[in-house]
Amino acid sequence: MIDFDIQRCTRKCHATARELRPGDLYYSVLVPDGSEVVRQDFSKEAWEGPPENAICWWKATMPDPQTNKISWAPHDIMLDHFERLLQDPQHQDAAYVVALLMVRRKIVRLDDTEKGEDGVERLVLVGLKREGSYKIPVVEPTANRIVEIQNELTSLLQSGDPPAE
Image (spheres, rainbow, N blue to C red):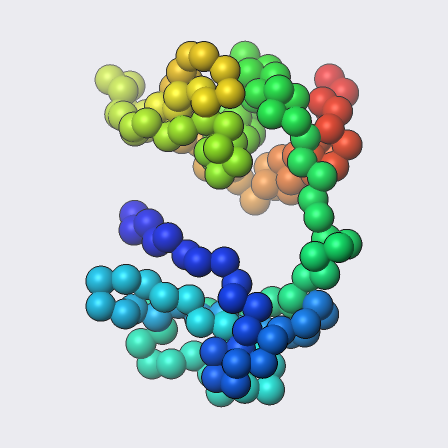
């Protein structure tokens, strides 16, 4: 797997330097620049398709910074929910997804990956907000479970309350 450090949206069109306003449709593309990968954002009007050397591209709408804030659950709520998921073997896929979210939120740090004697790959996470470490099996959710996990996490992230058991 290749990891890229992708910059945030520049909020300016790469071709015209026009500022992208909330609600504007825009396109982003990742292109190689020497040993780096650079993000370029284009307004809908300036978009002529991805360059030949594009690694990937996507279309998005510029959010309104005042109305699109996600109300994340407090770190303790997320950690409590995560630790409950770890206790239930039926929810290993959800624990894996929450672990990735917590790495992104800098609640835990990915220290290593390891393959156990059972052949299962595990993420080794170190707590940044709580002492201790976790070994999480890499269990990719099925398509059906993705929807269930998204609904559960949306409920958790928007309200800050743990889901009913």
